[in-house]
Length: 444
Image 1 (cartoon, rainbow, N blue to C red):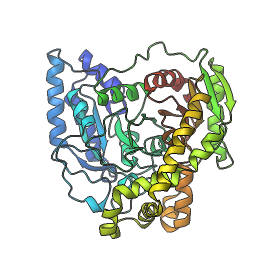
Image 2: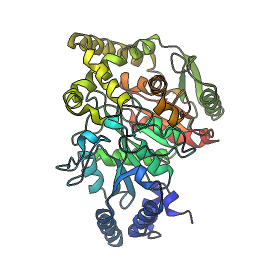
Image 3: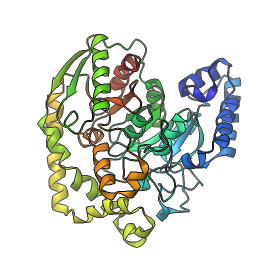
Image 4: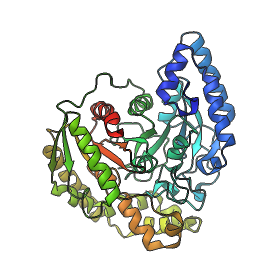
C-alpha cells in the first residue's frame, strides 16, 4: 500500500470511507513525520498536535458510525500563517505581528473544519506575503524540495514545502500576484488560484484586499477541486470523464513567452503544449496587447494597496523587517490616490478586452514561471538581484491577478517547471475539469 504521507487528500478520504484507513492513523503518520523531520521548524511555524488528534478522533468516530461529513473528512492539511485559527498565534510571517492571537477561525478554516478536515498546523511564509521568492530571514525560509540552496517560491513557501516533503496531504495558501502558483511550480505541485471573491476572506490577514485570493497547493487537481469546494462550503465539480478532445486552448505569446522566459521553463512548457495537442486539444497561439499594458499597472495597484494596508505599521516597526521587503512596501508611499484610481479604471477596461478576446477558448496556456528557482545566498547578498528575480518570478502569475481570472498550475516532468491554465472569472469548475484531463497528459 502507498505510504499514507504520500497519498493525496482525496485518496486518504476514500480509504477512510472504506474502512481501509483510520483517520487517527493518517494524522499520526503526518505528526510523526513532522516530528522526525529536521527541517520541520523551517516549514511549520507551529504544529497543532493536540487539536489535530482531537479532530482525527472525531473523524474516525464519524466514519465508524457512517456519518462522514464529506470526501475529505479526516484528511490532514496545513494552513499558511495568515489564516486565523481561534486561540492560536497568526503572524503572517512578520516579526511585527509576533504574538498576535487569532480571535476566531477564518471562514475558510471554519468551513473546512465543519467538513471534517484535520488541521495539522500553520506554515511559514514571506513577510506579509509580499514576495514571490519565498525568502524570510526574519523568521524562516523553507527548503526547496529539489535543492536546499534554491529559493522555495512564495509567499506560500511553507505551504508548498509541507506537501512536497510529505508533511501534509495538502496545504492552503493565498495568492495576490502568484503566491500559490510560484511555490507550487518550484516544488512540482498542483496549485489553484481562485477568482478574487470566490472564497470568503474574512479572518485572513490582508496584503492587497483588492487582489488577495485563497487557494490550495496539493498533489492532484482532484484535491484542488475538493479543497476549494470545502472552503467555499459547497460541492466540488464532477471531474469524471473529463477530456481534452476538442478542447480549445490558446497559447499566450505576449509577455509570458517573451525574451525573459528562460530556456528550461520554455522547453518544458512547449513539450507540455505538444502533449495536450496530441491528446486531442485544439491549440492556437495568440497575442494580446492588453496583457503588456495591464502588467505595466502592477506598481501603482499592488504597492499602492500594500502600503495603504501596512504603511502605518511599517513606519512604526519596519526595522523588524527584511530590508528588500520593507523597501518594496515603501515604494507604495509614492502612489497617489488619483494614480491608483486611474490605474484601477484602466485595469477594468483591459479586463473587458481580454475577456472578449479569449471568450471562445476553454483555457489560455502560459509557462507557470519564466525562471527557475534562484540561489538563496545570492538573493540575500545582492539586493538588485533580489529585486530583478522577484519581478521575473511573478511576471506570468500576476497576469491572472490583474485580469481577475482563476488559474491552475500543473507540474511537468522537468523539476520546478510548470504549465499554467488560465480560466475565466469564476470559472473554477470548468478549469478543474480541463486540468483533470490535462494533468496525466502533461506529466508524461
